[in-house]
Length: 79
Image (cartoon, rainbow, N blue to C red; front, side, top):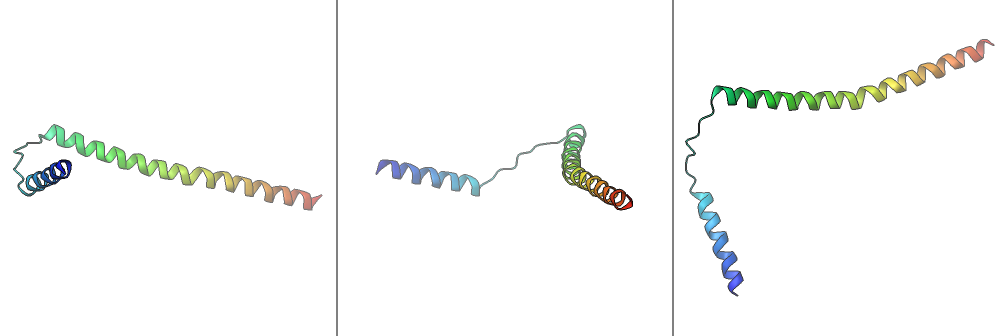
């Protein structure tokens, strides 16, 4: 019983704290802001490059394999 009352009390306290936020009065200077923007752009660029790599190189290998098989078929037909 006591543990249930404790959990209920904790939930009520957390709920009240969430409902009454206070301003942080924080300041982000230009250096920190530019660093954050740069880090975000680096992550986005990394994701784009990773997706490009996962798509491009298997397609490139497949196209080489297809070209090789077509050239082999042509050379066999010429003989």
